[in-house]
Length: 397
Image (cartoon, rainbow, N blue to C red; front, side, top):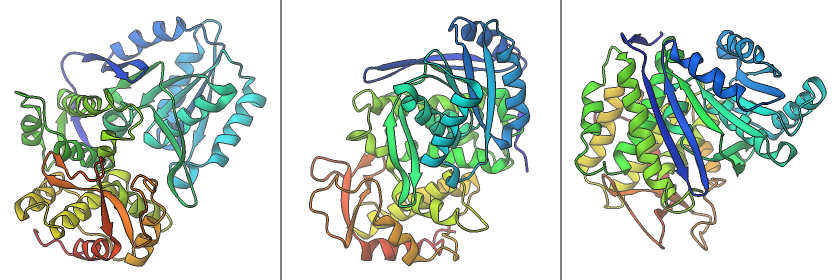
């Protein structure tokens, strides 16, 4: 099922300057005819010899058209590399294959530029390649999913997976700019929008809105079971996520301190995503994180932190979005716990025994539980096991 997005009568345009530590880049959102008429002069001014566009197979036609437009710029070429959309693709082997193809088939130089065109998976692969190819090439991100526009783009983290877990290899690099064309969302499958809304709820649950802002309330009121959205409503969703994320990143660009808040729901969520990717019914990233947030809320309730009403709020948000609130029976608790032992937050809490993991938990909505000068909490695996089992039954249905 595709999302139904109403086209505005006028073209939308919004620019942010993203400041993350020493990194500063523009984030530009467009719709309608202005998307390409504004972008092409900006690309031409870079005087790039070769653009290498990395895109996923799900946006093949859009990527081919974009590549043709860019290749028409004087003095530049644009070569498209297509990748399948699955977690196995997000690997160091893919990075090496892309690097070799870019050198041998395209002849890239230090004056070349990598473009990520697609969702968050492609953005991470393109960003990782740009960071390490010739010790750093220019990078442009052109997200085509709401999840990537809202949650992935306002960051400088780039990562790929290993067999041990998600994003175990990574680095930091910023794009020259981000160019988001809302037109690309018009044919996005419903589940992709729901995935993005789950990540948006992470910000609404963990980060207090700016004083006097009614953006949270406005967006929650605009959530529609029929999934009909105006492009200006999608722009508000992106605005909320960019504003919330930059509020934290301004003081923690590498997401090592307060920025670990963005890991809310991701400890169990990443395990669910990786485990499900090995079977016939992979969980989209956002839906896995949504379930991970329910587990985190149940853990916090069991530890005497969140109230029943606050745990119920988590379930209520996911019901509003229309996504599953039960962990699939096909994903065994033992397999989930085995992956948690390799979570990439290991070592942030000192002397963590084998029967405990570090999790981001909430003391109250908008208030993380803090221990050992971090937003992480030591949680016994027995408690996590019980919370996972409880999340197989939606007690608030």
